[in-house]
Amino acid sequence: MARRGRCRLLGLALGLLLALALAPRALRAKPTVRKERVVRPDSELGERPPEDNQSFQYDHEAFLGKEDSKTFDQLTPEESKERLGKIVDRIDSDGDGFVTTEELKSWIKRVQKRYIYDNVAKVWKDYDRDKDDKISWEEYKQATYGYYLGNPTEFQDSSDHHTFKKMLPRDERRFKAADLDGDLTATREEFTAFLHPEEFEHMKEIVVLETLEDIDKNGDGFVDQDEYIADMFSHEDNGPEPDWVLSEREQFSDFRDLNKDGKLDKDEIRHWILPQDYDHAQAEARHLVYESDKNKDEKLTKEEILDNWNMFVGSQATNYGEDLTKNHDEL
Image 1 (cartoon, rainbow, N blue to C red):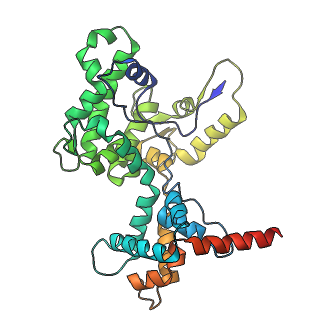
Image 2 (image 1 turned 180 degrees about the horizontal axis):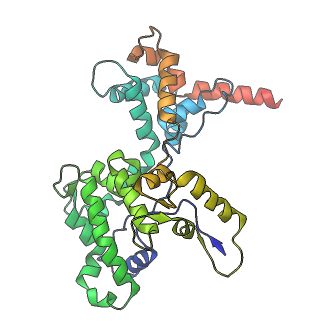
Image 3 (image 1 turned 180 degrees about the vertical axis):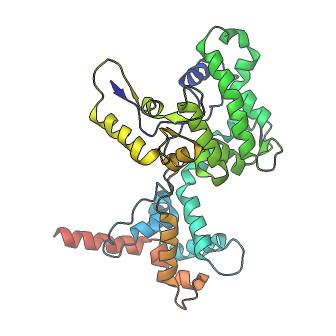
């Protein structure tokens, strides 16, 4: 018996990945990467720990990201404040001289998703073949499926033929959903939404639909309990189901199947894989505004942020203070 990950992945099938790996150099680009079933917003941010000696480490990592917060820890206080001032100008998206809770939340969310944009930057050149800083559907299709389309007889008698035939229209549907202006050409933001649909509000329906298609083996448009279990567990012998599978069956009946009809429709799948959890970015933005808003007008000026700079960013000075505290505690 083997347990498949409960949050099973989206994207291209194993046969497609294998075919791409074996294809010649003409097919260099990688297909869409599979993602976990259940999407947790701001998963990189996590829960705020109890404040540790007023180090503000959680705030720094939320505001800058873990890697950049380490970089700031190596700067002088003057350098940290100078860089923070430039960041404030970027956060103030409407240029009115104030940073609102909503602007701060948007910034924090983008910082926490930076790894996604880094991933897109790494693969961008594999798809942008004409170097116009956009990726058309034709460019993506040729980069990912070109060898298959040009040599269909090689796949005629293999299971990969079915995989390619299924995934090509699925990728095209997803590309068109990400392509907000409908010109069949993706900007970096649109291509990011294509590769990481779970991170974009306008792509959530595609995530739900692809999940349904992956799990709904009988094609009735619903996910019954057996299909739900089969997505995470396969019987390799005829023995009894382990306790965790029985627990998952109870989860299906008690919490997943909201209308108690024995199956999951799209709304119930959305409720399962896109849970409306606590918004960590919203909470952190409110916290930073509350702690820095001297005149209590519920928005921040650059001066208010720079006056409380060590809550937003670190420096050599704050790092040195933390080291002194740690060494004292160890003594």
